Amino acid sequence: MARVATVTVRAQRKRASGRWSLELAGRELRHAEPVSACMRALAAVPGLVENRAALRLVITELWTNALEHGVLRCNSSLKCSPAGFEAYYDQRRRRLQRLAAGWIRIRLAWNSRSGRGALAIEVEDSGRGFRRGWRARAVAPFGRGIALVEAHSDSLSYSRGGRRARATFLWR
Amino acid sequence: MTILTRLSRDNATLTIDVVGRFDYRVHAEFRRAYEAVSPTPERVVVDLAQTDFIDSSALGMLLLLRQHCGGDDTCVTLVNAKPAVARVLGVAAFPQMFQVA
Image (cartoon, rainbow over all chains, first blue to last red; front, side, top):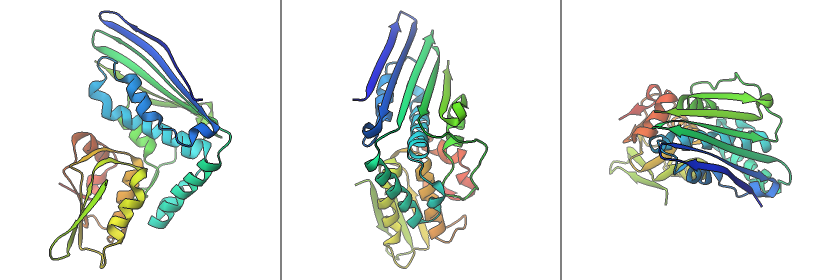
């Protein structure tokens, strides 16, 4: 079973804080749809409503990278043609079906006070990591995920050799 | 149905409506929407009025459509994007590669 842990949710009159995490391993990753679960966990955080679209995008992109590149090691350069694009998603489907090992952990932690707040989203995977710095050519049909996360969050950093991504949101 | 298509009466303009989430789940359906039309229409309009969400995989699909239509900046028009979707298109510099209306 996937492990979901809501460690704490504290809410007082003007303060709220909480943590939530989800860990999926092996076969659990085959049909996992964790983005909606994250959005539900964050639904009650005061002040986050206006950020919902950006939040969903950031979590989606970080999850996609962890699954497709970290755990499944799919090859993005396949995506250069319509046939290759399908081949990429065939590869994703086949590797997911056979997947027996590997894991992804998502951690959310938030704090808000008097309408101001901060949220950290961490997505960590069991893959080999990667080196940042590569950028897509303007018309290449892949390679935009990280740039989208950077533009839709307040910060993005990687640790553990690229295996752990951490994006933050601030609001006021 | 997530991807709907309409062809103009003179067969010159193909309009593709993307309903709901525009992400990898619709990639095959989206490709069929334009590859099934022969000859290739002069203009393709992607109507995003009912698109609630777009991610990087959908940006790839739009760029493949652009390639299919000849690869210049005028053949594909993206219309009616909601603010959150328009923001993603802007970050990816799509207004420089597509007609955006």
